[in-house]
Length: 156
Image 1 (cartoon, rainbow, N blue to C red):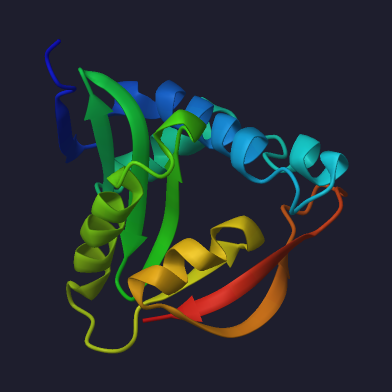
Image 2 (image 1 turned 60 degrees about the horizontal axis):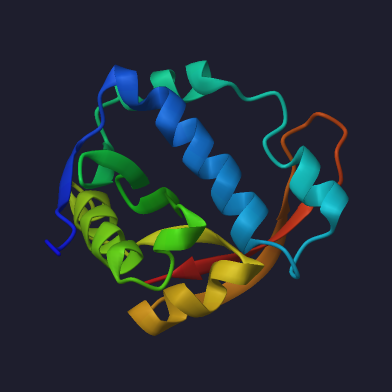
């Protein structure tokens, strides 16, 4: 049986639907046990694939493909890894770490201070294994009246 072919490339506008679906599937599959069903249900707020089209247009998102299908992505800006999501079935395979390598390298472009991110509770250990340290806790709210989501501020 041939091995899975994994590749990475800059996200394109037609990846927005896949990025939206990966985000939603990752939250539903990986955040259970750390957040309430109501928090998970309302996490995405009123986001649509269009939200991700706007992010992709900035040119800082990288997608991971397995056998030509997008299964994860990372987005970064100078000094911060802003988003990293993989499909639940890809978690623990090393692809998240490869995406984080890309995100950290991108966050370092034009920035010489610490690299920051806001981790979900379920992802805190993943980032700690990479070398990030916790600098505090906060809450994320998309401003749509849903229950806020506890996050961990981290830096490398």
